[in-house]
Structure formats: C-alpha cells, structure tokens
Length: 156
Image (tube, rainbow, N blue to C red; front, side):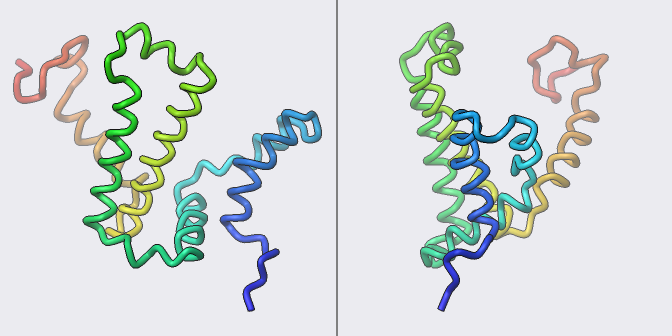
C-alpha cells in the first residue's frame, strides 16, 4: 500500500506553491521562511513533476513527439493571450490579476512540458542554456550586435 502522507517532492512542491503562499497571505508564516522554500531548481521541480505524472499513469502518453507537440500547443495558448491586443494592452497583462494568472499558468505549462522533454531526452537544461549563451556570445559579439536586431549572419 502506498503511504499517501509521505513527504515527497510532489507534496513539497504543492506545499511551496499552493499552501504556504496562503499561509503567508494570512500572516501565518513569515516571508523569509517562504523565500527559503522556493522550488526553483530544475531537478527538484522535475522530480515533483515526474511523481505527479507517474501517480496518474500518464507516462504512457509522454513520448518525446507527444511532449514536443504539447509544448507547442501550450505555447500557442500563451500566444493566444496576446491575440488582437495592442502592445500597451499586452504590457498591462501582468497588472491585471486574472490576466496575470493566465500568463503565469501558461508559462508554467510550457516550463513543465520543457522539463518533461529534457528528462525524456536526457538534457541537462541548465548546462544546455549555459552552452547556448556561450554560442550566442560568439555569434553576437557586443561590438557588432549592440542595439541591432539583425541575425548573426547579417552582422557586419
């Protein structure tokens, strides 16, 4: 029998993202305590996500192809938040509670699918991001790219 009361990555993630902010808002826990409990590392978040997925037997649906497709569908939902809006309206989204929640939710969906893709493909996202930044630094040297929107192949 599975112990449903065990403190697992998913339980920790739920506590940090859902329960503790409510306690903080109610003044039951100080901000300094909550700050130390943020789950911002990829490995911890991935572990919680995999536990969430596996508890529901969804791994069977998570081929690399399906995950990549799903990430793009979620990115389209993020894009949909901007459809038919002016730049000023889009810039105001974070200031509107309902729109900000939708923005956060879609960004989270994209991140979660990206973590699943990375896990499935064996990609260390932090290392890949550092590597990509180094490649981009070579492609876009400050002295050529500063203030320019040109692609690296078009820089003089």
